[in-house]
Image 1 (tube, rainbow, N blue to C red):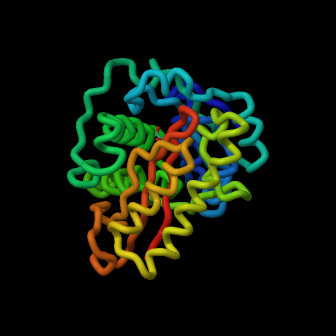
Image 2 (image 1 turned 30 degrees about the horizontal axis):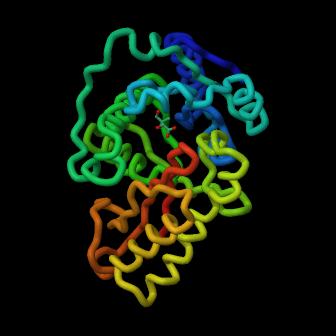
Length: 280
Ligand code: PAF
């Protein structure tokens, strides 16, 4: 496995592989890798000859400076994990390498960014789109792999690719959970032992909400999720929305959309966790 910090060096090696007829699969990450990331890389290796992983804590997608400051940075351990799943190339650039000048790109994702994470994290999706667009231009992958836990991010990236006709196929990959149901996230490592013990209640509540959706209306199910988590005293839900899985717009009735998911962001122990559940 080769580790690159310079764009020019990475591009030269990727081009060599392309000349040799190899296909490139790409997994962008911010590091602090866990089993969820590793499953993306295994999938990339199933689809493509060469797996490229970027590790870059992208400063311009953080709207909260404290979140950026405390975001886990574990490059050495990450590289050890990547070796075990057959990753071929790691790209771990500095902020100066990615942004020699302040980024000026602008994007418009319309209604996709007007809900959920959009209003809660101003500038977040512009930062994600900027870095992913730049990384796609650098790596020029045939396919790129994204987890469905960041459901809205996945929709934004699909829109980016469609709007700009980028020559890359986006492959959505299922959420990976711990045995107790907690969706794997780099942020989980910031939870205290006590908070980690109660964190699986997020997914447990979401699963119960699917049961309830057979007899309750959308508003009742939303209220059930928020009330249940609040009653546990340690959770502070930021939002729980039940949305059309394509437009991401909230629905009022179950029959309004063919595909329906519930998306939640909740604070626990000073850590912001997100999760997604499918209703239909
Ligand atoms: O999902 C993430 O880890 C990040 O948002 C991404 C896609 C790597 C862009 O920085």
